[in-house]
Amino acid sequence: MKQNILVTGASSGFGLLVATELHKRGHHVIGTSRNPEKYASKLPFKLISLNLDSAESINSLAQSVFSEVKKLDVLINNAGFLVSGIAEETPIELGRQQLETNFWGTIKVTNALLPQFRRQKSGKIITVGSIVGLVSFPNGAYYAASKHALEGYFKSLRYELKEFNINVAMIQPAAFKTNILDNSSTAVLKIDDYDLLRRKIEGFTNNLVAQAGDPAIVAGKVIKVVETDNPKFRNIVGKGTSALIHLQHFAYGFLEKNVLKQLNS
Ligand SMILES: NC(=O)c1ccc[n+]([C@@H]2O[C@H](COP(=O)([O-])OP(=O)(O)OC[C@H]3O[C@@H](n4cnc5c(N)ncnc54)[C@H](OP(=O)(O)O)[C@@H]3O)[C@@H](O)[C@H]2O)c1
Image 1 (cartoon, rainbow, N blue to C red):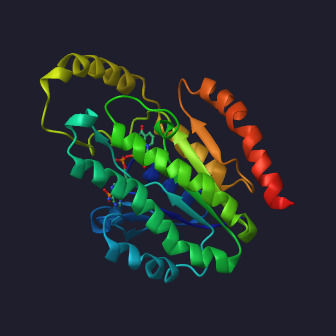
Image 2: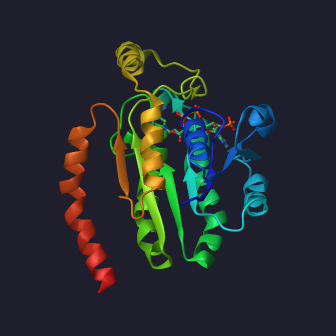
Image 3: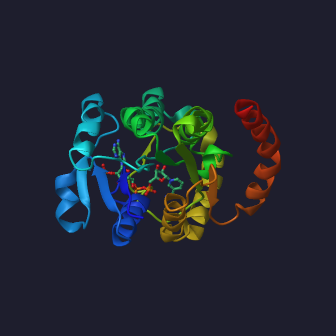
C-alpha cells in the first residue's frame, strides 16, 4: 500500500538511501534538509527545508508537509550529527548543542506532527537512534547521551500513543559508512593527561571505521519497519550486535509485557 512518508535528513547517508528506496517502491516521500536548494534538483523525491536547531523552521514544518499531503502515514526521525571527543575536553556548549539537535530537535519535530497523527488515529514514528543509545563507547559521551535520551523518551511515548493507533519504533544501528564522521564536530582543546587514552581511542576508532558496514543494510531495516503493520520497538542492526539482541530480549521482555498487561486490563 502506498504511504505518505516524511524522512528528516534525507540529503545524505541513511536518510538519502531510505527516501530514495521508498520513493522507488511507489511511496509518496517528502525529505528534509537544511539546504534543500543544494540537493533538490538531483533527487527524485520532494525535499523541504528543516533545521532541527531552529524553532522557526520546526514551527513551519507541519504547514509545509500538509501542503504536500492530506495525511501522513510515517515520520522517520533520522536527522542528527555526531559530537566526538573526550568528555572533559568537550566544551559544555558543544555538548548542549548535541542534545539540542539530536534529542530536542527530534522531539520538537515529533510534537509538531503528533496532533495530525492523533486526528487520523493512525501513524508510525520511526526514530534512528544508535547502538550507543543502549551501550556507550569512549570518545562520544554527549552523542551517547543524546541517543540514550531518545531511547528513553520513545520507550515511554509508545505506551501513550497506542490508543491512537500510532506505532513507535527505534532503529539502533552499529557503525556504518555514511558521512557522519565528515559532518561531526569535535573538541579543539586537549588535556595532556588523556594523551595515552587518546592514542588507544584512535586505534579503536580506526578499527570501527574499517569495519563499518554498508548503510544499505540499515536502509533495508528501516524500510521493513515502514512496511510492517505492527513493528517491534527495538531494531538493532550491524556487526557484533547479536549478543545485545539476545540480551535485551531477556532484560526488557518481562517488564514490558507486565506494563502492557496492566495498561490493557
Ligand atoms: N553512520 C553511522 O554509523 C550511524 C550509526 C548509528 C546511528 N546513526 C544516526 O543515523 C542518522 C543519520 O546519520 P548518517 O550516518 O546518515 O549521517 P550523515 O550522512 O551525516 O547524514 C545526516 C543527515 O542529517 C541532517 N542533519 C544534520 N544536522 C541537522 C540539523 N541540525 N537539522 C536538520 N537536519 C540535520 C543532514 O542534512 P543537511 O546537512 O542537508 O541539513 C543529513 O541529511 C543520525 O541520527 C545518526 O546519529 C548513524
